[in-house]
Image 1 (cartoon, rainbow, N blue to C red):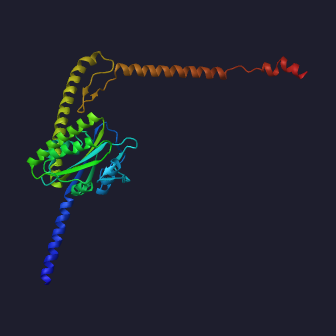
Image 2 (image 1 turned 45 degrees about the horizontal axis):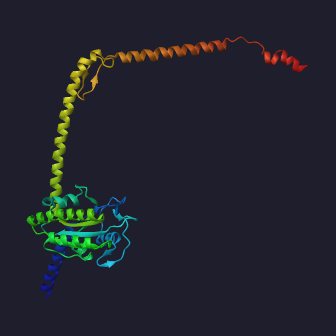
Image 3 (image 1 turned 180 degrees about the vertical axis):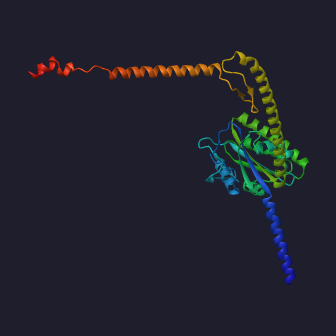
Length: 332
């Protein structure tokens, strides 16, 4: 019995550790997009996009009037990177969840551009540690669908039929492999165009919340690949800049060799290893400047000496104002 209990405890510990590893080895990214007129969501001065499920739920409730089928507004958590505008309200919103083992942003260019900020479509982002997509979809009364195209079209039509209710619709799809990831990525692109068309026709603003779960391994591989590409591009750019600088220095040197003979700012010399012009002779400009400063200083010194000499050799006599006739008259 003791061995059986020990085996069960060990199995439970391993299961709990595996669950914790799965939670830690994943990340949930949320991108917020304004489609249409805009101006309903504002950035804050906060620099940390990290948040929690409660924080994101409070943001949704503060931006939209109807969330999870309930018409109420909640106080948003502090310190978040996005807040609703005080005067402008959205006309509706939709949550699109993308999760599953096959989510790899390297094979989803449209979603990757939005989540990573490369396309500049998103107003801001939230980052949650762990697999939190299903919980967020549940809090927004969403459901998992098989056909994302048809479901997104139906949600867009629902937003068009609901006038000025500012309700938040929600749905999610699971991605199991690379082929389904490409299909979902294309569907998201078409859905955004449909929402853009709806917002343009009605003159409204619709907020799209894109929730994407990505495994840490896929994110690490993608970031590593991107870092290597950036390093290679930087190395190539540095090499090109060095070659251009060398060519410019050589061209300048050749031009200067012919121009220095007729220039007042250069004299005979050479270029050092850093490309600087080195000369042991004084240029015409330096000689002129030295002589101008020298003779100006000597002239001012001579004038000052002459003035001091005149003051010292000034003749001494009684002051006519104090000892003259006027003083005598005042005395009488």
